[in-house]
Image 1: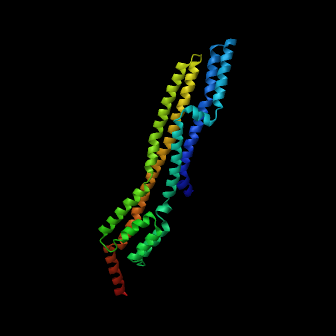
Image 2: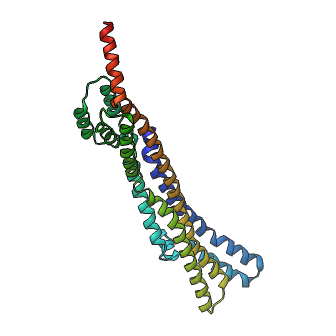
Image 3: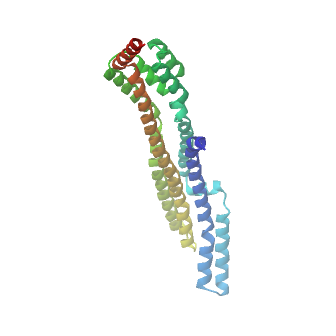
Length: 286
C-alpha cells in the first residue's frame, strides 16, 4: 500500500485528468441531439415540423457518433499542444515519483548502520567518507560533507551540513517548475483555442446563407469549449502534482536534517571530547 501511494498516485492524477476530458467530450457530444430535437417538436406538431426535427436528430446523431480524433479535429489545432502538455505532465510525474522515493533519498539501512558505526567508533574520517561515496544517495553526500569537517567545532560541521543540504534539496526540486508551467499554460491554451473556435463559428454563420444558424452557432461553440475543458483537465492534475511533490521535498528535507544532526553530534570536536572523557572515566572506574 505504501509503494502504491509513493509511486502510482501522482501518475493516476494525470490519468484521471485525461479520463475526465474524454468523459466531458462524450457528454457534450451526446447532449446536442435531444435538446435541438425537442425544441423543434415543441414549436410545431404539424407535418412541416417533422422534417426539421428529423434533420436535427440526424445531425446530432452524427455529432454524437464522432470519434475522439474527429472531436479533436473539430476542437481546433490548439488541442494538439494541450495533448503534448498532458504527455509531458505524465512523463515528469513518472520521473519524480521514482526520484523522490524515501528509500532512494534517505536509505534507511545505510543511515542506521552509518550512525551506529560512528557512535561505536568503528569508522575514522577516511573510512566514513569512503562509505558515503560508495552509497551515493543525497543523504550520503551530506554525510560526506560533514565528515570533511571531522573533529572541527560543531558550528563548522553543521554549516557544512547546511551547505550540502541546500545543494541536495535544490537537486530534489528539479523539474518541479515543469508542473507549475503546465498548470499555468494549459488553461491559457484552452482559452485561446476556445476564442479561435468561437471566431470560426461566427465566421461560418456570417458566410452561410442557409437556415439553421442557431444550430450552427451552438455546435460551433460546443466544439470550441472542448479546448477549455481539456486545458482545465490538464492544469488541475498538474497543480495537484506540483503541490504534492513540493510537500514531498519539504518532508524529505526535514528527515535529512534530523539524521544529519545525529552525525554532527557524533563527529564534532565537542562530541569527540565528551566521548574521550567518557572512555577515560570508564577506564578509571574499571
